[in-house]
Amino acid sequence: MTSLPVAAREHVRQEMVADPRVVSAIVSAVHEQVPVYAALDDSRLPEVRAIAAWGLERLLDLWVTDGALEPSDLRRLRGIAAARAADGRPVQAVLRAYRVAATVLTDEIAARAPRLAAADAFALSRMLLTALDTLSEEMTTAYAATDEDLAADRDRALRLLLDDLIAGRHASVGALSDRSARLGVQLPDPYCLLVAEPVGAERPDMALDVATGLLEALTVPGVPGVPGDEVASSATVRGSRAVLLLPGAAAARTGAVLGARSWRGCAITGESLDRVAVAHRLAADALDTAPAHAHRPGRVLTDADAHVLALLGGHPAATPDQVARLVLGPLTDPGQRHLMEALTAYIDAGSANAAARVLHLHAQSLRYRLRRIHALTSRDPRDPWQRLTLDIARTIRP
Image (cartoon, rainbow, N blue to C red; front, side, top):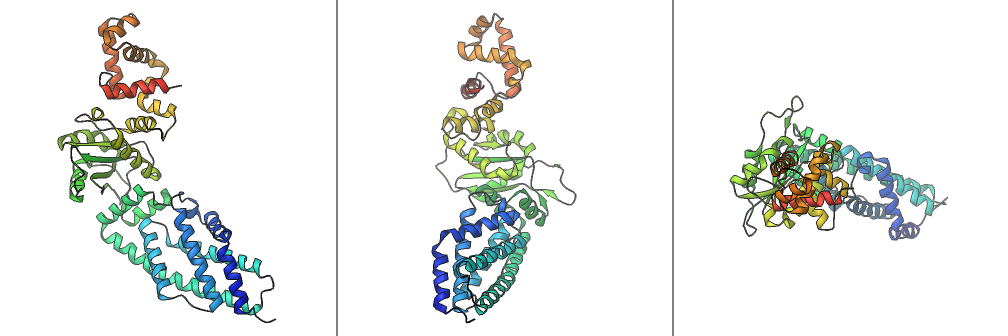
């Protein structure tokens, strides 16, 4: 049996490149067969699709022309490998993804050329084996070099890791653990993500050393870690804002430290490590939308404030019931019903004296209950902003 003419191979190539289902089949196969890729969030899939489309077209070109990967191809592969080292995706998983893609490519060609001659099949096999061997060597070398560079400059590596967490460029908690292990550190869990900005400044340049100074002031000593590891705090910047990843125990100190520097901020403590991007968006949006009276010296906005503001803005990140529990805390317990009644009467009546009359209590008893509410929720019903959050929470509570 004679081999297909080059024109016939070119026809198959054009048909496959023009059919978007081929790239979709490759992406789906990689997503299903490589666990690390299955854990990727939706923001990373367009990148996977773009690489798959490029790889498909280049490999088909090599099959049609009996060509070999060119220097520009190798540079691109090295760049992809360096990016995967930076975002913590294991090189073994990356190379497996290329092997899965090659299998799909072979199946798609076979479906379009059922009478493929042996010579064409051998040419396809030879091209794929050669290309996979070359890209494996190039990508492994580039990955290792980037990995060594990142480990050599740990502070920079931690900052890059935080940048990737904020942007959502990570595969899974497992990949984050692998990446931090290579740096000899342990990411704080539970953690506090603090987004802070100077008060009254017209978006000044936010120097990294200022963020680092905040980090040093907020680092809590003596936090236990895995033997041989160090619990890592890190800092980066976004415009005029500092973004700090801290152990959860540092949250209690954020208000005092920022207040002493005339800064304000939002500290998120209720999200998991695979949702740092969500935590950052909550905090940043809260700083964008919170009214001036929501900020008080010595106090930062919290998860509850951020979720209330998201709810008011029409893009809630939690259900009303979850928002209510965040704000009200122990007040939702049946045993605290008398405090909820006191809060409701105080908000509705407008003063402690009026609320006391409604509940047939002495005014001092009502004020004592307000102090208990403050102690249990960290929200003072007498503060305008905190009273508003309490009012919203008790209103939307089922």
